[in-house]
Length: 286
Image 1 (cartoon, rainbow, N blue to C red):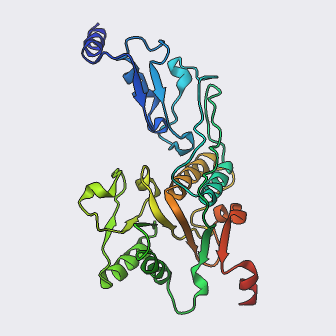
Image 2: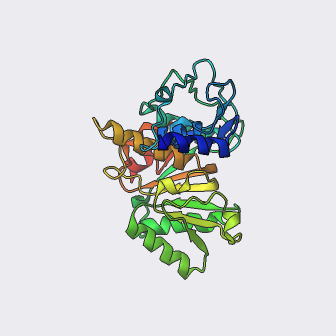
Image 3: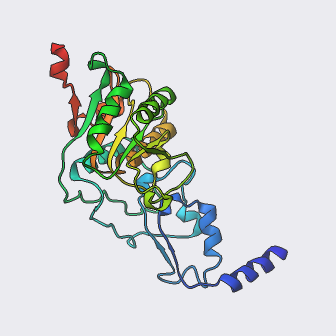
């Protein structure tokens, strides 16, 4: 009885006719159920409006529309324009999500978006072991120095602690300012941080960059045995592919991967969508 009275009180104070939710893939079934309590009539046409990209669902937010009595069959609409990424970046990212089956319910219409009209260059995968006398961080640092003179910002995603620390030390020695994006902190616009002059951003976690975008993105150490698709590990594979898809689509114009000696099988899977440096033929000659 007490719960029912509380529900009535909440509904009276927060009563609304319509709820619009952006990034619906990040909302849990429980959260949506609570929000629906404040609707005057959840079954009323146009009382709920959702937008999002269900390929970006994380493992904690498998929203179950059917449990809430929601049916989106023949009621969904696919936005077929992308104004963030180049066609080449999207082609590589789309192939990553083809590797796993993203679970959806109620025959919700999820169609791959039309590729962007912005053309660019293919994404690049660099084998840092083939540059004699240079360490992994040296290669990344060289790319940063070249890029910050001609672009607004660059993101380095580096889950390897030693590599990240070495790179940060090189940036400090060169007096290049940078900002660390910490896990579980959502910063949607770097202009709002009071650090408008910062061009270099570093994060140890692919999830940290969700909701953001950068001119150039470097995803480091996609090396065989480190970040890979594994047979018979459906949940883990879905999570890895989702986070990699998110990381790749943060890049507006340029996407770079690094690896040592042998690439991750994720890179092998999209090999027709990226350039390898050195190429397979060049490696055979080395």
